[in-house]
Length: 100
Image (tube, rainbow, N blue to C red; front, side, top):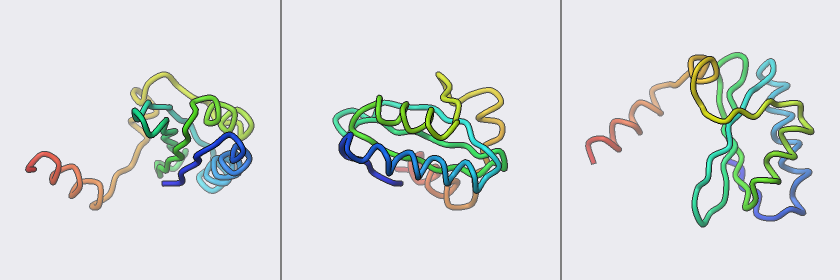
């Protein structure tokens, strides 16, 4: 996870999003509110790989996605979620959350 703490880092967020999209044959994304920490842009590549960027302001992530040519959707569902590939690490983590 790449954390972007202020608007002066908007260019860094844009570079991160652009590099991700280029490395994975394009990307789509969804922005989620994290509470006091800010917002998280979850990126899903055309190849199913995923990554994320965190920023204090939603506008920073919207600007970064727009500049990188990444479509931001309202929800991480449908075609975007179906494309998402998870591996053993994610399954272990999810199982740990359920078990406690």
